[in-house]
Amino acid sequence: MNQKRYSRQLLFAPIRKTGQKMLAESTVLVVGAGALGTVISNHLVRAGVGTVRIVDRDYVELSNLQRQMLFDEDDVKEALPKAIAAKRKLQKINSEISIEAIIDNVTSENIDAHMEGVDVVMDGTDNFTTRFLLNDSCFKKNIPFSYGGVVSARGMTTLFVPGETPCLRCITKEEAENGQTCDTVGVIGPAVDMIASIEVIEVLKYLTGNKSALRNTLKTIDFWFNTQFEIKLTKVNPECLTCQKKEFPALQKKVQDLETVLCGRNTVQIHQRAEWDLEKLEDRLAKIMTIKRTPFLLKAQISNGATFVIFPDGRVLVQGTEDITKARTLYDRYIGS
Image (cartoon, rainbow, N blue to C red):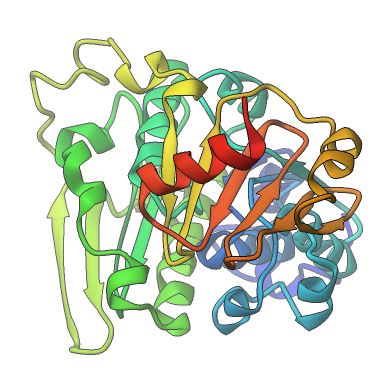
């Protein structure tokens, strides 16, 4: 451990050398490398967490630069997957730790592999479908789950600890994903930074053994209108299917069941295959579409403006609509099964 790198953190009494060593021996999974995930990953890497595993399904676009701090215009030009772009930046910040970049859509079928060996799972996502999946998997495996979400100038966050706190399903209905999103009400970057930073502070407490300092509340802040409140995480829902009845419903859903509207992207993701051969697909689609292929994905634009972004792991982003039915029609017409 390079003590000079962490000198200011080592001076902080609750961490010191013992806590820094604990961080160096920790592994944190960050799901989502967008607005929340880039801030989270940045803080974890600078703090010296030994292994930071970043999983993201998307690639960098111009609209990301307003709030996703690890990306720049070159990443947009290259259409880099966010996980890859984030790793490139983070390696320049701290070459002493392990940074794993995984281009994947987290599902019930691969979540076990992504969570292997991790001490904490951190939420950098933009949808409750994935959050409930992370929640259920964490409580099944007895791993803390750091939750955070931001829309407009308002955000909320907490650290769920199996056996010590309620879980996400106890306090939030799955229907919450039908509420406000950054697509309908927008979002400002500083609000994202604040919530992500609060997430990381609680995780640093946990990883350095300072569990008595954990806040144990669901904290909500409106940074624009200067309001905030906290709900104590004391009462579990006795009917909770996750932390009480141990049924873990999100883990029962299959990839083929998931057609997801992506927040703020005017995009629907369809994932019904295990993989795509991008070279063969390029040959077929180049006859009727404008094609761009990178080592990581294939972009295919049809004349009416809709664009398909196709990944080797079987995912297809249908850009230009949030209507799932329309997206499925375009998918079936041009991509097929």
